[in-house]
Image 1: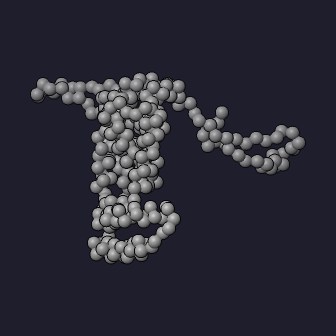
Image 2: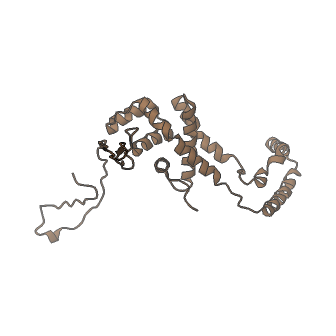
Image 3: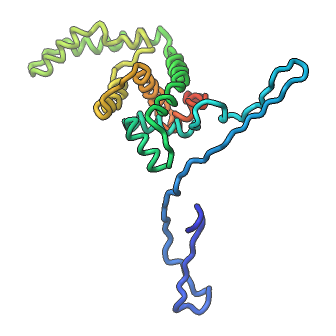
Amino acid sequence: MTSPGEKVRAKAAWGAKAAGDHRLAARYDKIDLPKVRPVVTRVEQYGGLCQACGGTTLALLPQGLEPGSPFSLNIVALAIYLRFTSAISYRRLSRLMAELFELAISEGAFDAAFRPVMPCFDAEVGAILARRRHHLAESTRRQYRRRMERDLDAVMALAPTQRDGCRLRKRYGKLRGHLFTFLDHPEVAPDNNGSERELRPTATYRKVTGGFHSDWGKDLSAAFRSVVGTAARRGIDAFQAVRMTLSGQSVLVPG
């Protein structure tokens, strides 16, 4: 077994009189995954008695080794990633961790590990909503609206005879006052296609797992979709987005 990145050179022992007679005939890669096992760090915190005040002063702990859940940020991030991107139930998630990583994590332990991360996702969702800006001047938006209203007048002047065309014209006439809301309110998208796309994973999750059994669970799932969806538009994958959020970093990169 060779270490990662190590080159293996196989030379034929027969038919060659000297090393110089060998020529490269093939080059290819073989890819494997190492066995992943948990690394346990035992933390011992010492305290000293202050001679002046009589109080006990505790030694500072390294970042990431504070009291609380025994599971690291990486483990919690992986569990959240699997839970909400692949719609894995607590029971299946517990079995997966045990079989693949030799990690004994009960369903209740997952629940206890997920609850404290809610503020992290809530803060990131708040930052995402605060990024909405008016990119166009009001005069420019009015100009665009006048032009689109003229184009719509031309469309509405048509007299379609086909059933679908008649139905579409009737619908435009009924909703005309709301077709250009996005020009009056730039924070509103011109369509709801993005919302519909973001709702599909939630619908799939509900079908696979049977839905949520707590209010905080559905809130965490909604926040997860907001953060991961925003991160994807910035070239950040879902697992990296979860790790960044849990570590206090924002997926809202400049630009």
